[in-house]
Every structure is written in C-alpha cells, then in structure tokens.
Length: 276
Image 1 (tube, rainbow, N blue to C red):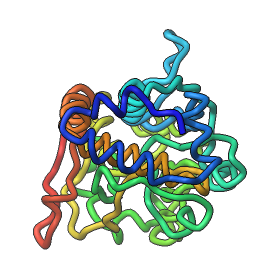
Image 2 (cartoon, rainbow, N blue to C red):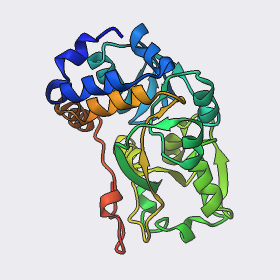
Image 3 (cartoon, rainbow, N blue to C red):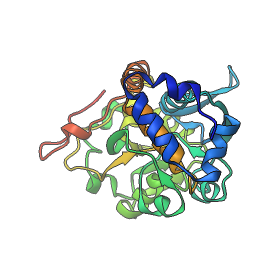
C-alpha cells in the first residue's frame, strides 16, 4: 500500500493515530478515494449557513463547504461538488452518486440504513422563523397548528416530516427552493418557516426576522455528514482530522466566520429565549 505524505506529517497531534487507521483499512472501494486523490461531495446548496449556491461567484459556499475543503486540503484530496436534493439524498448516497453528502444533514435512522454517518458535529432543534411582530403569537406547536397560520417548508427532508407530524391543521406551502422560504416570511407570503434553529437564527440576523421564545423543546437532533456505504476508511480519516488540534482550530474559526449558533443548549422548561 502506498504511504501518504500528509499522514506521515501527522495532522499535527494525531499523526500516529492517523497512520494506524490508514494501515488497518482494507476496503478496496474506500481506498480508491485516497489512491485517486478525488473526493466527490454532494450538497443541496440551499441551506444557509451550511451550504448555498452563490450565483455571483458561481460556486457553493457555507460552513460545511469550508469544512470539507479544509479536510480535503489536509488529506491531499481534490474536491468536486455535485448537486444533491433532499428528496433523493438517501438514494443518491446509496447508489454512489457522491462519496459524501454535506450541508446541514440531520442524523436519522432512515439515512443510516442507506449510508454511514460521520461523527456528529452540531446539536440543534427544530424552530420557527417568523416576523418580529409574531414572536409572542407563534411560539408553540399549538399556536402554529392553526388553519389561519401559513407555513413554508422545503420538500423531502426532516423539516417537511416535522411539519406533517405537528401541524396538520396549518396552511402549508411547499417551496422547491429552500432559499426562497425566509424571503416569503419577510414578505408576508407565509407566517412561519420551520427549520433547524441554526438556519432560523442565521436568517433572523440576515433578514431582520426572529426566532420566538418557545414554550417547549422541538425535537432535538444532531448533524453529521452522510457517506456512501463501505466508506469506513473515509469516515475514520475524517474523524482523526476533525478531532485533531488542526481540525478543531479550523472548525472554531469557521463557526465564527459563519456565525453558527443554536438554541439547543438553552432550551428547557422556560423556553429558548427570543432571538432577534
């Protein structure tokens, strides 16, 4: 097996561990990624601040885009990004359309069955994004589950599943492009966007909207990257990098760059607190 210079360098404090992991792997399909030095990454490009398509620069940007590029640089891999969609994410991962999918992906059993998750990197919960004038009115599951309340949601992911489960009485509009929903809240086309609290807090700042103080916790969950089956080696090497001093430093810098915050750690009996 050809030895890799970047692993010999050691990823700073974890070189020995990385070298051991590399030599312990025998999976031929996973090995090809590092032999070819090519990593194909699927991303929806519609989930700020994790991934979005910047039309002006003609490329993907976001926290997860930066993280995977930092990892690829450390691992001496060339990255190619390909378009993914939420409805087909699991099937495309299983079929090998890409080696790994990134971009605010929630860990759940249905996806674990078709692929393999990396270790989690964020805890979060679902949350509503509303106009500031509605923070007191739309602050609970019961208040939003009303025929007079208009909800915007993207198809095929955990947001749509959450809306179907908790808001059967509400007036729901499905937006094919998730990036259009915050604008619809801003314009008044819909009253609520139901999404991950990290995304909701991002748009609260970007569009002068708000995340209400909730009266109850909304399904806490975790985010990770989803790999196609039989990619244990990729997962192991990624874990070594993200847990290394270099990886941790990169992640902390990128969290500040993209202003990544969550209500998850503060949600309790008294609610999450209003965020504007």
